[in-house]
Length: 207
Image 1 (cartoon, rainbow, N blue to C red):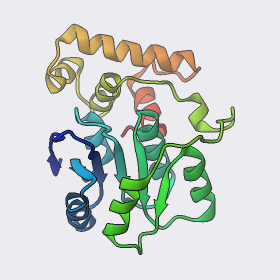
Image 2: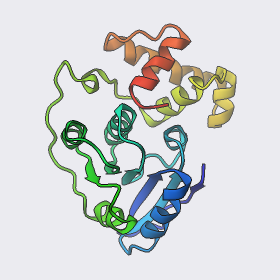
Image 3: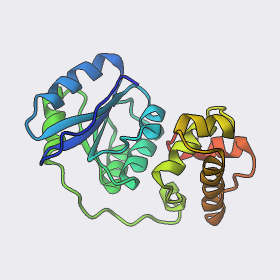
């Protein structure tokens, strides 16, 4: 993880940033220089963001290549309660899906200051209802701790190691993973085997 900071409080919005090393510096400077914003986390990989205690913050900025993972990451952040600003060049189809999810899109050609402005001004709005054919319609509602446990476990950690990484007891980590499996089973997405958990986590943008 590149950086994680705590919010100073007040009326500032906390912002978590996902970007490569080149873009991250400019985005951090723009967010830090905006009076209405405060950097909460700055990472290079979405997995790092999901497992952070600071996730999601008020706003998540996703500066990553266009594609299915970007959409999955946006949906995951939004379902976790964050507003999302995407800084990328997307085609019309992806833009429509991001818009339906509730994300704001700033073209990659726009400067970091435009992203900061979007993060400060974006408002929560009503989104289009998910249909049964939309992958998001079958996404279980995982708690922050459940997402963290899933992200750690699907990267190869044992339950004991998940507990250590989360600084919780073994039984607590085991309970988180059991709840994850139960919630996926409730929407008819099997997770009885580790590889199935990995697949679910990939489908939902958690890893």
